[in-house]
Image 1: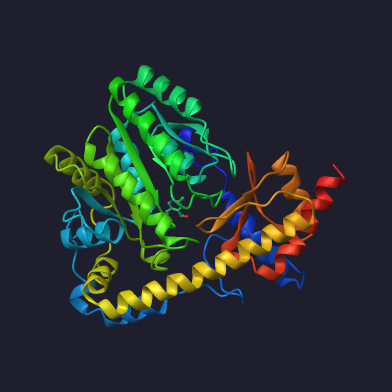
Image 2 (image 1 turned 180 degrees about the vertical axis):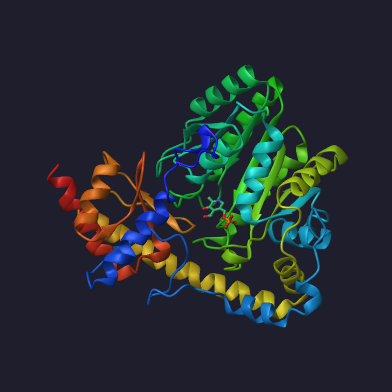
Length: 405
Ligand SMILES: Cc1ncc(COP(=O)(O)O)c(C=O)c1O
């Protein structure tokens, strides 16, 4: 044990659990075993290759030395921030208080640091993207959850109200992280009615103390229904513009541009121009990563100016969304065939298949060469890495494991 490491930093797992599962799947595959690997978190094509968007790569190759080499401004290039916000809300003229971040992760982490005191709790959905808990811990915080609605069921508004009221009473403020639309890991978005019920309960609770709603937009471009996503964003814009709730967005170029490794994104509060909020964000950037990579910011600016590139990108998003949709349809058919409920995917890279004792089920599936990620609520299945033709094998393996339990 390294004595220099402080005691509170000594008991972490050597590897991220999802990366460890993926490594195990790869190692077994390399020995010639037939492996179904649904742990992957990046979009793979039908031959298992990483999907990289051609329209984006063509822009990347055009970048000049001066679009790559210099430092970007500490809070990010303001024109980049505006362009990124306008991809989500085309009618907005300004990003408001905003900064560039290394991916959506940077935006989420930075929000935790600025809207809660150490020791306080972040409210998010159950299930949630696992790194929220890691980021909370790294910022001296913890998570509390309220349920994400099951397919075809309404939001449990009472549970959300109760959780929010308790936080406002206990800590005098609340930060909610909501990965909607295209939720990871369920693959479902809030329905129109749920979204409105959610906004209403936020409005009511806002009388008890300041609430920040951080919308985590990681997968919006991969959806069965782009019009549904646009309508959701319009609803959130109404909530933000009212000003009772501080509404912000964590935006990422990782999935939307397949620039996972370029580490670019932004945190923006488009309806807030408070100089104190802007100063706090800039301070956090300077004190954490100083400034973010310039090249992906420059790329987004080129994209914003080039209509043809935008059309090509939209067509690529449609193509890959259709592929994800076909995979989800195949999975639902296979689950129903094996007498299990369908998952009703609406967007994103994942779905969550419910199972009792997910850790044990996951281990038993692994014995059959089927790799998924266990969550408290079930198994996370990465549609992004699962071929439609593999769906029957997954469903049959799961049926078999569940039937012998
Ligand atoms: C729900 C969710 N939010 C945010 C992110 C952030 O990704 P990045 O930091 O690469 O932008 C991810 C990535 O997997 C995610 O699944």
